[in-house]
Image (cartoon, rainbow, N blue to C red):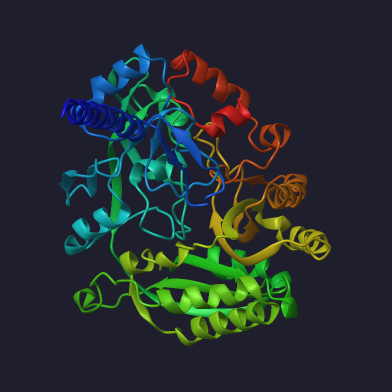
Length: 477
């Protein structure tokens, strides 16, 4: 009997201790989780993930300072290279901080919390006949994240996103909330936009809007050697062309030679209400299937090129609103595979050097084993307002979709080829986009971004204790 009593007591104590340590373990696991971005190439253990809200402002800054913890800022995490997190950091998830705060249809302005997506804004303003001026080709990204990367899009009449930002509120490293605009704290305006979250947390943003318009699509096939003259004469000088998109073939049959361009011409078509319902995802499964073939088979890439070219040519004469042109398919970006992943690169080439640049790029890639799936081309006009400005002059922006493996050896091989492509880009006075894998060297960044040293010097001035950090900062500071 006594032995049974001892056994019961022992079991009670054991269960209590087990429950205590399991609870402690669970608590600590909530504070130490693994985070990565859409590339899945850089999984890292962070301290904790916090869904940002105004009530947590003081607590976050205070905890970070007391425990000497870095802070990183995340939206939808479609950058690639650890721009939105850091090891053992407090990561602020801004996606729930997404309210529309004010909207003035007459003045064509809107103020939103930085976690709002472009889709949130389009849904709100579309009934008023208004549209966004500049955003990426997909509307799934947060406003704060897009501003931090100083995004650009298809519109050739507006340049980079910085052109349309009127003002924003910023939570600084010392816990203060300040107003930032071209008139107030103006130095920070050009540092934070395109600053990748290193100067503080963007809280609220006031943006310029524009009229929603009706466009007529027109697609034309041409050879890459014709593109520069065609663009300068038939697109840039035609005031009715408001948006433009081009693709150049990655198929082996026409590698970096065959092209097609799609222009969106302004029309005087009335009856906007007939076509202004915001379109939804339609061809996700087809696009995913086609990209799968292009990733894995040479014949699949040839088929994919012929199919998408034919599809866009058949869209000639289609009428679309501006808001719908700026709502491209996005779910096809969700690619999951245990052996490989997709990464992006983007190179900015002065328009007069496009032909010889493509020739040099072709010579390089014909000798390399790079799984280059797709190249999309847009136009970006010169804008050096941001300290880390990529648009040093009027340029074509080439967005490369590359499929690569997860292993260290495969990553090193991709890095080697990308550095060669960056060197070619720099040799023509071009630059590359910063929100992607951190493959370029520090020397390449300094050449592409001549104000790099100024940027990091100002970072130290405004955030001397490195409160806001990420892997981009660690790599290039």
